[in-house]
Structure formats: structure tokens, C-alpha cells
Length: 472
Image (cartoon, rainbow, N blue to C red; front, side, top):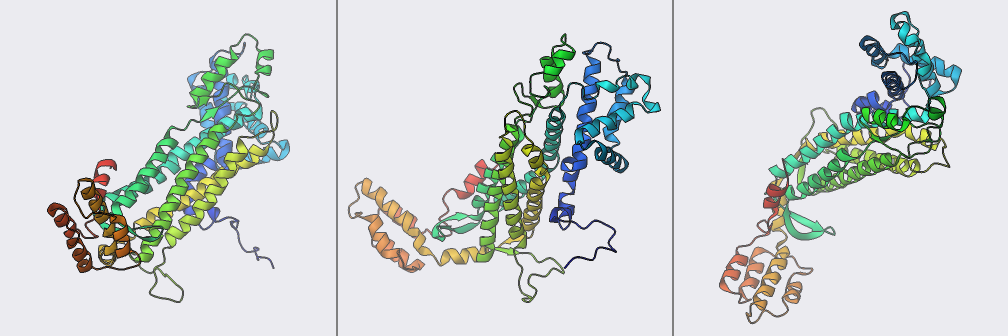
């Protein structure tokens, strides 16, 4: 059975990133699409041409004036639908993507508006370069642009939303659950602050990750460079050029830049994804416990058959997209650090999926941001849960008995075991707990302090920790 596509004029999307989630990932198109790759290749080729003429590095190379440089730099700026189609047609003939870019630029140099000087520079285009010289730099520019211009702002936004919620809820007491069981109370804000702190640490790593590049020929030896123009300091030319693009120069490579920086970056982004995934599963659980209520969206449907439901779909959707993103990022990290001998093309095919990996992460970021914005903390539900679990005060009571024993107070023997006998498997109320405290013969100050303690008041320094260690 096949779809009837005869009357459909627009292409039908194969993947959700180009269909259902198109709006969420649209900003990545300008950085990680095939068209963006070709535009970045043009940028690198143009800047290499200008650098070689500016030197002067190659004897006889024309000296370009400011207008000519501006014309050259306008070529990638004007890379639109017509140019994309033209380049695709050239590639149909060359059966080689980078060579097609070279020919595309050479056409622009021979246009009447380019001037005679640029026509004379035609053979300087792609001079001494292997395709990977252009590709590694183009991909570095693309990935850096996608990270700095799209992914990091979205990741920072969701982290800031979590941090703001943490500060707002810093003093809202909540029953903790270690191993899923009632445990020492905390505050909802402090638990959110833990995630904000973890995520910000990863953002700091990503912000400082190096982006490397190289331009040194077919096997990284500058062989063609030295053979053609032996008088130039090609190592310095290479370093200066790569750094002029805002990248870190890699001095030792094979034909390819080794991609280690990509593996490092993708591992950091995957780790951010996984921490955010952990947040999603916890928030989902808090919703199921009633600690968060979801603010209804007008006109939205939760269940197709149960009208009362508001499903936590934003967080479930984010979980799935984060898992897909991590799987792709992990594959890229492991594949890109290996190349047979001096070159194989596994990296080329793999790197075409960078946009997909970022896209699924971006969809998740969008969903989490929107999902968090529809939550309301239900302090009453958390208070009721705390009041139903007075046995969590066994910890401070037995710890106070230990302190009293160390201070020489008699009758404080086996505090852990006595509290274990009282509380394990038993639900206690406030009266039972306070009656037990009164039988212990603790020092007066300790007895008073513990008799006034409630599960909701047993949150230690939780609120203070948020205030002190979670920056705005």
C-alpha cells in the first residue's frame, strides 16, 4: 500500500524534524543543513583565496582591493535558492561536492561585475587544498554557529527556568524518596536547584570546548604547498588562517582533522541531555504524586477518552527526543575519532547527521521549557504527604540520642535499633512520635527541640543552600 502523492505539491517529510517538529528546529537549518554546509564551504574557500592574495604568499597573485574583497564575501551572503540549485546542478556533473563549490566560485570570478583582477585569481581558488581542508573548517564553523547561536541559548533558557523555579520554591517542604521510599524531607526548590547546578556545570564545559581546524593538504604534510611555492612559511600561513576563522589550529593531522574536539563536544552535550532527561523523569513522578499540578491549556485534550486527564506529554516527549539525540551523539563521538590510515569516508557520512542529533535535543529543550511553564507547585499535597510520614523523624531522634550518648547522658544506648523497632514498617502520627520522645529522658533542650520538630520542618539547610549556591 502506497501513499497517493499525485496531488501533493510540497515534499512529504520523512522525519519528524522536517515535519511535525519543523518549527522547533527551524533555527538549526541556517547552521546544520546541506545548504548551510555548502555556504560554509564557500566562506572557507573565499577566505582562503583572500588570505593567499593578501600575503602576498604566491608570487604573481593579484593584490585585492577592498571592493574586490567585499564582492567575494558577498558570494556566501547571497547564497539563496537559485544558488543552491545552481550548485546542485554543478555537482550533478562533478559527482563531487567540494569540487562543485570550487567551480561555483570560479564562475563568480569571471562575471563582468567581478572585475579583471578577480578573474586572474581563478586558479588560486582551492589552491593546494584537499576536500577535507575545506570540509573540516566548514563543519567547525557550522557546529560552532549552531552551538553558540541556537543550542546554547535554548539550553541556557531551560536551565534558567529551572533555577528560577528552584529559588521560588526554595522553602517549600517536600518528602524525599530515596529508593522510592519516604526519606528525610527536603524542599522542592532544593531538588530543582540540584538540576540547575548540574546543567550549568555542563553549559560551562560546552562554552569552553575547543573547536579545531586544519588546512595542510592531502596527508597533513603541506606536500603540494612546498612543491609549488617553497619560499612560503606554509605552517604559519595555515595557523594564521585557521585562527582568523576563530578556530583553534591543529598542527598535526592526517588528511582529516582528527575530530577529537567534536567527540568531546558531543559527549558534553549528551551529558547535558542525560541530566535533563533525569529532570524529566523526576518532574513526571512529582506530577504523578500530585506535587505539581499542570495548568490546563485552553482547548487542549489530554486523553481521547478520559476528559479529566492532563497528561505530562511535554516531559515524555522530551525524554524520547533526548534519548534519540544521545544515541546519535554517542555514535558520532565513537565514529569520528577513528579513521583508517590517513583517510576514509565514515566521518563524512556520519557528520551529515549532526543536525539530526542537535535537532532532537532542541525539540526536547523546547518541550521542557514549555512543560515547566505549565506547572504549579501543590504545597498542600506535599504538606499532606509529609504529615502522613512522621516516621521520617526517626533519623534526627536517633542522631540526637547518639550526640547525647557521646556527651555522657545515660540511657541513650542502641538509638538506631530502638528507632528501627519503633518505626520500620509502622506509620506513626505526631502524638505517637512525641510520646516516644518524652520517654527518652534526653537533655531538656534536645527534648524540646525534637518535640517541636515536624516532618515539614525537618528540611535542614535546604532553603539556605539554594540561596547561597544557586546563582541567579
